[in-house]
Image 1: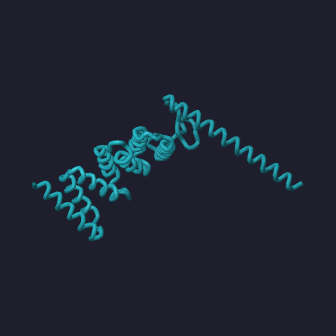
Image 2: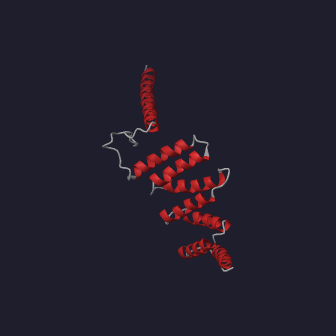
Image 3: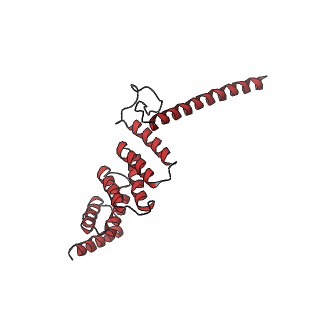
Length: 195
């Protein structure tokens, strides 16, 4: 008898969970259809509450939710141009959160690796924007060195000089081996400029 009651309670809990899950899925699908049709009345929030209770577009929780939704959409997109539009949307509309930093980095790599003809100009623009917007990012040095390589490949020697100076100045704890390599790149760029 106790076993029957246990399974009955377990069944009720499961049915309740399934109903809540299905209503959430239906509500999410309805909101997606509204968004896809351009309906501006849809509010993206963690609990799908009313517009009055929804976070403002400057609130980080709103930005996180929007970024998560767009990153989910990106998983279902194959075309690099469509992906680029979505990553740009995250970078522009979700500034100030880590997803926006990630979007700029991925967008730069997308321009270099996923298009039939690499768009180096756009990749450079993404990395320059990253450095400007997120100077204290934990990814900063990785982005700077990637940008430095692109500048060298494109023979933007003046920019190589400025970026080398900035990296050396900003990172006083840099290992000597890396500092020597940067100094060599700096000197090589100086030679190219003076030719």
